[in-house]
Length: 316
Image (cartoon, rainbow, N blue to C red):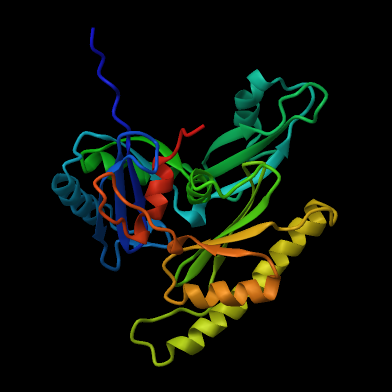
């Protein structure tokens, strides 16, 4: 008797200016058999918030038709500005089976979060008897996720999962054999006008923060190099604070960052890489230096790294 293997969901990343997708036969770096992208004009999405749902749905509908992925299940990323992560210690009286009910009662009340009408997920950190009951809590605003889900449905897709970009970056590192449980890894997603910083230990995210730059790069600006230097100085100041907080406030000076990973579309990413290594004395690896190919052998551009990481969801 033959069995039909269930197709993997499409993995979709939607940024303010670009939509990218990959399609895989299995959650494996060597199983990517299709990928595509579509640019978005100004005024559709701003800092992750959809400004024009109809326009976005029309653009995505045309792309879905072109990519031949209509009626497929799809995973997508929650926009970075709307991701909140924190470690929560649970009362001893709450069993692991009761966590979800406890969170429904306490998120936004005894557990403060920065969003009204939040939606949440969690991952247990400690499960052994005698250990403190701790979870990693992920929170996003429900209206925003509803907007994205409705756009995807209007475009002919079936949204089944929302994930966060730091996890997709880390899945890439894991698939490339770049991580060990004892490592303390900082991941920096550097874009033209913002950065997403996350810290991982024991294959779990411990900390995330988005940095919104005070100085913006404009394509027709008079002095891009000066603006870039101001951005780099601004970023290095914040990174120094984050590293100090992680090392001394969270770990009492007992740990050090093992490696820094950078990824993103900032036009001066290489300059950032070199300067960062000089300032921190921590090994810095730029994921744009790694080559990725589809199963056909076709090179995959680096703007597809986030949906590739999302497509690896489920790898053990």
